[in-house]
Amino acid sequence: MRAGELRGLGSAISILTNPWFTCVRVLGEGRINLPRVQSALRSFALSPALLAHLAGYCRAWKPNERGVLLATRTGTPWDANLLVKRKLYPLGDSLGIERGGLHAFRHTNSTFMDRLGVPLKVRQQRLGHSDSSLTPDVYTHVASEGDVRLAAQLDAILRPNAPKNENGSGMEPPKPFVVN
Image 1 (tube, rainbow, N blue to C red):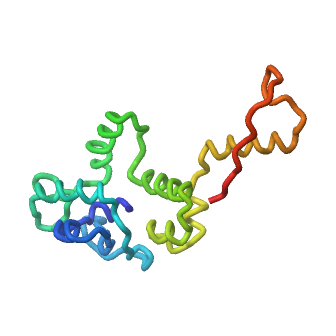
Image 2: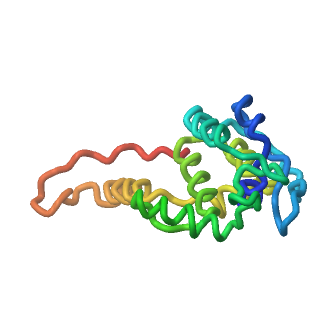
Image 3: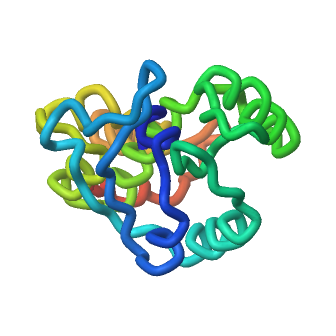
């Protein structure tokens, strides 16, 4: 989800009764609006674990004037920068996760979906991209173990008779490289 979509989350009832998240509003510049592009109007499934977590959150949720789920005690929607600094960074630090903004989750999500072999059209739809090249070209990052595996395979092809390690003994042939 984009930061504005996350900040515009509302209606605890819809989250508790439907395993699908439907992006129909965003919070930006202090106002709740429709998403600015048609492709951002989308639905995607939420995991059972996330639904259970959200259900617990929603039970303790106190309705506010704008009906947003992520609000301060006074009902003001969370500012994206404060959300990152006050909530995300301390949580990530406690889990040993490198610091990054909310947008880093979109890149990570795209990369994980690619590694799992999720079709490009599904990834594009879940991320709300109207341009199909944006998802693989900007949001999907090469996984380092895939690059290491490719290097070993290229070495085996280009130097088939070379010793496989420093002491000259052979090593297991590299695993096949699978393109997802």
